[in-house]
Length: 484
Image (cartoon, rainbow, N blue to C red; front, side):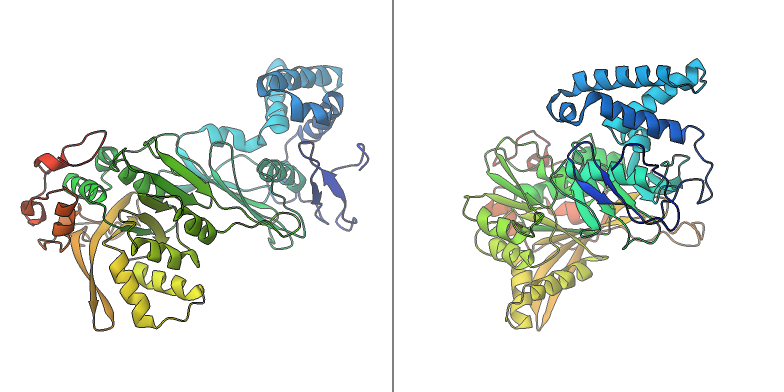
């Protein structure tokens, strides 16, 4: 493409091709390039200047330099080149405008443009880009629109291409959807026209920089102190645990927190689509699935990794999320001596979670009677933990439910801890919040299984009147769990 070609095309212009300076990947240009101005946003008065300086900077430095130069040195060279190109340009600028443009163009060349400050903001948990003109964020569990915007769809496409090419993936008209991740582990999903009718869309689930321990989740009122100690004991006692909840409610966060109770003497293998788990133990093997390459080959599925992990002598298997045929292999692992395994699933209640596990097993194409599948599910899982997002943005555990077994053709459950809805008489109608997580008074049937692993639980924990921390020796927090 000619370097002098205008980026803003006419509505009926023929599709053109742009080239990413980072890896040479090609993106199909939109037939009608939308700008922030054409969709009702205030146009960036320096938009054309930024594009011009950006291109001159790439031309002056050279594409090969971006691949071979260390990051600190590259950032210095880019900043100096942007300064020089702006000084040579005839556009009148104040000192403040000049410094701001240097920072913005440098971020555009090396980073992610308007997303940079949002990625650096620790309070932002999710970033949602709906075309070049709309950038929403999630902060404190609530959505809000930002004043940031991309110059046009081409600008957004360049940033998307930079993200996905960094992990060896591509996005273009033939492959208009992609999952990727940022260097810090944040999950990224992108979809572009012709599938998206509002222009390129980008969603970033930010990776938490801090590890949340169970006691910190207690402080955040995600669960009660007694429930936290009980769940820690269940992990040490090698129960198989299923964590259920909707999108973004904190399933992975809870899985991370619970994993801290796994003894350091055990070999742990984690299997994920995108590596998010950060276990504190030393003996951890991390496996990650892989999509198809450009030729449509080389795919490694979660199911393949689960099967391979069984040959790696695991003490614990932790699958980031089950969402397909790998569910049957996970159940088989739990039922064949790999106690203490954990995974997550998308569902709205403990009952729905087991029903969805059943449905996912059926997607594997196995010709097994439905009752046999349910028996496998009832035998595999000991505990289901349900996480719920409240309307005020808070996340909390609403159910800690034991899987009892089969009764006729039904998997039977019993709630051990429940957070009940607040009485509507005493709470505003628009805030139907939950009460703190409290025991139901029912004793779990797996106490003997915990005892066999050297973990003793005082029955008073399950007394409905008990609301404080458990004061029995096996539940004392320590950095390394194990037998007493």
